Length: 310
Image (cartoon, rainbow, N blue to C red; front, side):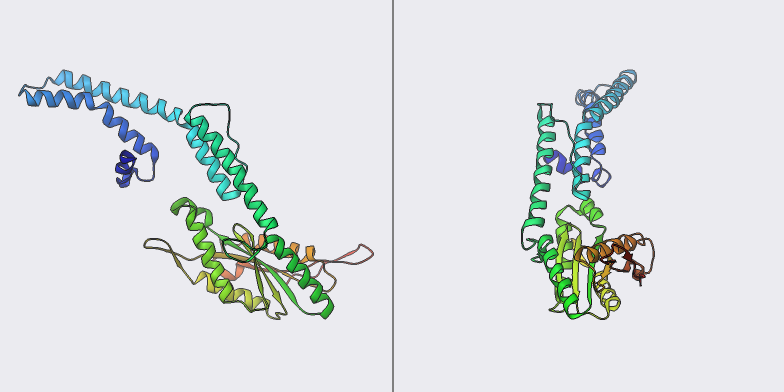
């Protein structure tokens, strides 16, 4: 670790393991030449240019061949790192070989096992637990029940109901640059802003790792409410690393309840609106990342009525 720490202090090699490896091998390959020059200097003997050239050429050739071969040998480590990064960013299944028995093979087996175990644990918590341990909000299963209750209440009292998905953009980049703990920091920051800027009748769900869901019961101004929340979040930077401030970027898809619509219809309307909002990430206007969608009502004769989107 001391050698790694020393190499990491060099800005040129800090973010590239290949450069650390190349620098280490280059120093090792030139030791013979350095020892030869040092002995000549100690004995006050003149250097032989031909021998110096031979030693330097031999060292450079050895360095190049060794670097290429070790780069090939480290391919399993790069593959493991890529699989784990893909799992952390997209919850993808980690597919690594398990037949090798040395320390690299053990690393691949352990990485695959931990990824599968973490995915099962996360799915269990989101599906089974009542609250999310990171934010204290409803977990997904509880949120679905609450949405069903509000849909039934809105149907009985003919009141308004809006259900919004709020997606945080850029978390994968934060994880790559500042570590996975930085993602938790951003999530807790956004959760705190939501908690302090919603009415008591509104509720929030930690729907997935990068997705919040918000229910607005009896809200007659959904556009203004969502735009205000988005503005508060994006204009409230946090220190994600020492001296590094970032402001979360949010996309919002809102499903608007219509009398006769089911819980699934409201949820689907919000999900489809979110996809449209995320497709507008490249636009400079933050309001382009807010999309409203009306829930689809299915009537008894199985015909479908599509309300126009606002």
